[in-house]
Length: 217
Image: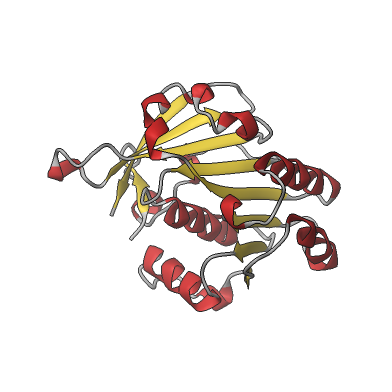
């Protein structure tokens, strides 16, 4: 099970390659992948992990703060339909519960310089505030030449602002990130479209608001 871009018909897209529809991510960037619960943001983020690990020589580090290593590996196997041998990819999973924002730097400095870090999720990190968490991650990304991706929850009651994301209450701390990606699936009033998900690029370096249609297959 994975996402594909409905407008891409090439082989790589059918196999779950979605980096074509994403903005360019630079070293030192912090990127947020956000949605209300149940939209598939963990699946989406782990699919990005697999794409990066297949394409790049940099190691991908996955901080799985809610699930065990084995559960995270199961999701990645499901995304790739068991076509990818995870042990042949440069992916390291760190399953840590009750982690504090100040715990990240010692882990990063020991082995993760110049890597790509994925964190699931913002709400699982112990910190005085989400703003402090993102500010700290931004400093680490710059200091250690990292690309950092982190998932975050949106409140269901704020979905009325999904097409005007800067009005979302969460943007009072999301603004710290360089890129903000939102996933949104409309209510299931049409069963034939229940697998369609909007990928909204709410913030990026080029400043353009953009929407892509993804299909969960």
